[in-house]
Length: 572
Image (cartoon, rainbow, N blue to C red; front, side):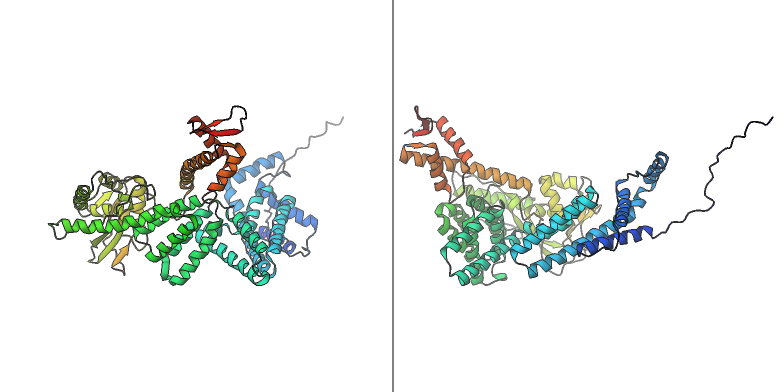
């Protein structure tokens, strides 16, 4: 009798030899896909079948998404373990190739941009750009992982050059160039026909006001030109530029916002002595006064008057007082009338004893000659010239802010100080003090202080000392504080809120003037009349007008008609 059949076992053994993969497999696969994409861009046959393209895309999508769906559960676990341990190495080559691909795409799009600009009119160029954007979006949807959409479309969208839109001087200069271009076309081709001129003016007014920062940018453009003044152009050319700027100014719907920014920029020019030409400054004021009336420029003219009065007051101070110390510091005070100058947060600091003594003498002189006035120091707006001798024997005259002067004077009696010690000694606000120390210790070529440890961030225990090795080819060294040219988002919001608050009394005054002359008026007529009166300064919001009417009713300037609620009556 035969025995039971033997059981056959299964044994798993490793491969007798390692299966070596092509080390250049990844690069070869990517190059095939890369060449295929390039041919597609050039509208040529790629040379690969659909099956090969799909296989390549599947391979790269598999790596990029980490979803190994062809694997069994056991292999999936092993795959995830390898990813966990060597993930960065696995993706290193993929990331490198994808970066290369995006960069080549950017170069290709830039070349197409130049090609389109040279051979196409403006309208055709915009059509080509729109078509390219649509094509890229469709390719991503059809062929690639959806996560690559943002990166690829952002590369194509660089054709809009958003950085240039953020440069106020370049933005306004391009507006002026466009205006000159179309003015010339209408003049040469259409004999300055009024219908064409009206259409051009209407178009410029529309798209200039689409950018809510146009008032700020135009003011910054004027600021740039008046700072440089005749250094870059003669007075006639500067006058021509200012006349052209006034054409753009007429298109602004928010002229009061421009006034707010222009006052800020003018104040900085005057107080820092950066105004290149007094005649050019006065000329710009005359242009604004002619365009908008005396009320628009009254405070601006008051700023110039304050500077002239300040010079006379300083001369009288030194004529009336005698300084016992020959080496006592001299002081030049600019007395600013509250209301004429932009509102500034009153930031004070502990002045050095030498400066404090002469400041108190001036205070006593000024209050003694002007009864009923109050003098408040704005140390955050001042500048100083101080003489410095460094360890290597070099001598320089440093032009610094008042805050920077207060910091530097501390080192006359100390070899090294921590940030916390400087803060306690000067009482300068933390934000301003850090910015001040960064300018003194970190700006290349102007490092009069040394910081330990060397880093841009400043901590309480960071140490500062005089840089004994400081050298400069110039005897007079200007050390400025780095500040943003444009407003930050919080500053922009604050300015907007102040403008909106300033508009409320103007809207109320317009309503009262209209109702005082008309006595009875319906709601729509008030809206029309108020808009018409205020349009030269700003375009009032109908919602705000309605709220101001309600406020006047509450304060019994107006009342609603008892029979018709849409009618308002003026109360004498």
